[in-house]
Length: 253
Length: 305
Image (cartoon, rainbow over all chains, first blue to last red; front, top):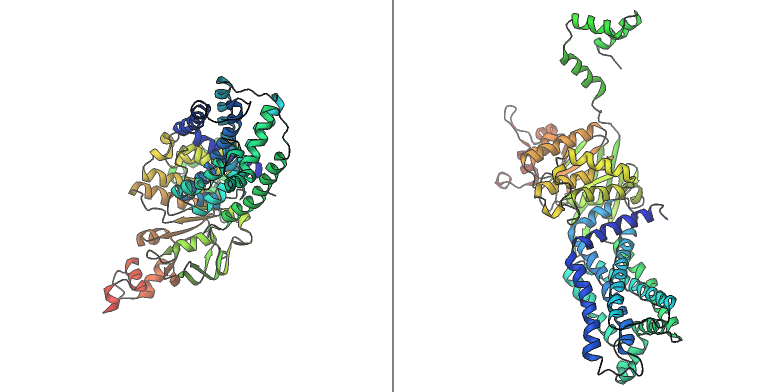
C-alpha cells in the first residue's frame, strides 16, 4: 500500500468539501428537501398513517434520516461523473497520487456532507417532537448505522458514475433504482400494510433492515435480527461495489 | 573545462597575493566591461545542457485501436533523446494525442512497448507518474477552486510537503503572470489564463519529461512567447520536452527533432533542416516546414496532379 494514501485522500476531501462550500445553493437544497419531507410527512400523512402507539414523528424521522443518507450518497456518482466530464480526470490520472484516493476521497466527502445534513435534520426533528428514547449512546449508534449505510450506497453510486461518465445520465440513472428501494421499505409506513408482492420485497430490502435497526436504536426497542441483515447488506454492497468502482477507474480510456 | 581568460587572470592574480579589491582595480584598468562579465556568467554558470545521445523515451511497435475499429496508432516505433525538445507534427486525427496519452500513462497500448525514463508505462506507471508532467489538449483544472488552490492541490498530489507546495505555487503564479488572479476561481479565468495555469500545473514538479499536447492552442502571441520561454528554460535545466503541434512554425522554432505523424504512423523524422532537405527542391528555393508537411501528408493539390 502506498504510504501517501491518507494524505492523498485528505487532499481530495479538502477539494470536494471546498466545492460544497462554494456552492451554497447545493447545501441549501440538499438540506431543505429532507427537512420538507419531515414536515410534510409528519403533518400531512402523520394523521392518516397508523403506527400503533408510537408517535409518528418518532417512527418517521429515523426512516427519513436513512432515506436522506441514501439520497445524499447518490451525489457520489454525480460528482465523479462531473470530474470525468471536466477533463481534470486526466490530470489526476497522470499524477502519482494513489489510485483509489480519487474514489475514497469522494465517498468520504459525501459521508461528511451526510453527517452535516443528518445533524441538521435531527435538530429540526427535535423541534417538532422527536426524542431519542433509546438514550444517547443508542442514538449515536443509530446515526453511525445510517452513515455507514449511506457510505456503502456511495460505492454503488460511484460504480454507476464511473460507468456513465455523464452528469445528466448519472443523475437519472443514479436515482431511478433508489426510489423503489426507499418507498417500498419500512421508511414511511409499516410493511404489514403493503400488498403481498411488495411486502416481500420491502421486508428484505436493505433500506428496511437499516431503517428498522435505526428506529429500534432511537426508540430503545430490541434491534432483533434486523441489525445482522443490515450489516450483511452493507458488507455485501461494499465487497461487490468497491472493487467494481476501482476497476472502472483503472480502466478509463 | 576550458576556463575563460578572465577566470584564468583572476586565479593567477590571487596566486600572486592580490586582494579582491586590487584585482577589481586592475581589471577595470585593463578595460573589462560589464558585458564581458555577463558573457562569462552565461558561458560558465548557465552553460546550456548538451542533448544527450541517450534515449529517454523508447516506443517499440506500439499499436492502439479504439472501439469499434478505429486504428489510432499503427505499429509506431520512435525514440526521443534525453534533454531534447521533440515535436510530433501531424494533422488532426493523426494519432499524436493517442501517442502522448500512451507515454503519459493514460492509455495502455494494445501491443508493443512504451518506455519512458526506464519505466514501462504499463508495468511501472506509478513510479513514472512522479517524474512526468502533462498538459493535455483540453485544460485539466478544477473550475471551482482558485488558481492557487489548483496548483497547491496538484503539488500535494505529487507528494510535496505543504510548505514546498505553497512555495512552488507562488513561484509559478509569478512566472506565468497569474498572481493577480491567483485567488479567483478558475471559472472566471480567460482561455489564455487557463492555459497558463494548466501549464503551471504540468511543470510544478519540475518533471524529467514534459508532455505538451498542442500547448499553444488558445494562447495569444504574448502567451505563446511566454510558453516558448518556459519550455527553453526547462530544457536548460535538463527536462526533456515532447510536444505535439499543428503549427509548423512552432516545431521549426522549438524542436530539435520532429516526427511527422499521419494515419497512426510515423511517416518522416529528422531535425527541421533534415526534413526540409528530405523533401528537396532547388538549393536557392526557400523550403518551409509547411511545404514539407504538405508534401509528406499528401494534403496538397501538388501531389495529386
